[in-house]
Length: 163
Length: 103
Image 1 (cartoon, rainbow over the protein chains, first blue to last red):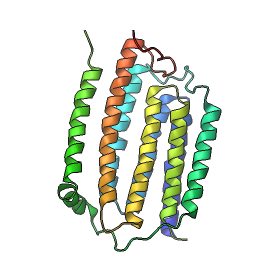
Image 2 (cartoon, chains in turn orange, purple; image 1 turned 60 degrees about the vertical axis):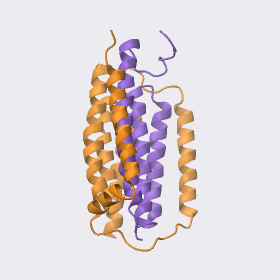
Image 3 (cartoon, each protein chain N blue to C red; image 1 turned 45 degrees about the vertical axis):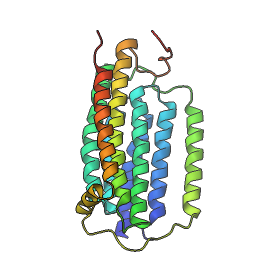
Image 4 (cartoon, chains in turn blue, cyan; image 1 turned 30 degrees about the horizontal axis):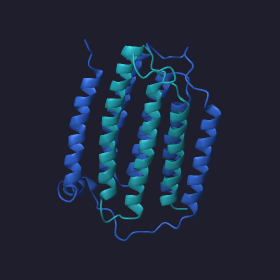
């Protein structure tokens, strides 16, 4: 019962600011509403016993990405952009497409008999994740670090002022 | 009623569709990036939930989530650099006004 209550509260904390993110006229407000969304997702991760992923979520999403987005908003729009029309002409089509997709996905999710796997998650997942990353997933780890390096170089080259 | 896999899948489906709505209707490129972030987070919730309920013996879902978070950070870095470059050259970040291929 307590788990269900926690799940419902965390879902509300996730989804209500997400609505603000996609509908607010003030772009700074929608960037700031990303923070409670990401923190609610962090709570869902903790509910799913993924505490290491939850920590990384707070550090990267709620910390870094939100601040980066706010920086770019301040550097480009010159403020909140509240005097500029923020939505295009596709609002009706967007609502229709999103609602249709949501209904379809939820219908499929609720009527599929999901299998239950054997075993249980380890008590502390962080050390197991480290061992998995450096043993069976080491190629994934290396390729990810390569992509990180390339995107770092690419971001610098793209954002550099040309002369 | 215990919390099962379907609960998390429904929440992530709703989050994904909110992100999709943002991507479809926003004019500001940064707001479109925010919608993409929401969609990536929905996928991450799915991965972690499947890891807990369907294959709890291996931690592959959580490792994959970490990879997705890393790539989302890359994506937002490059995407915002592109937004800055477009703003410097065209002085707008409204994607329906960025409509020329050369200048």
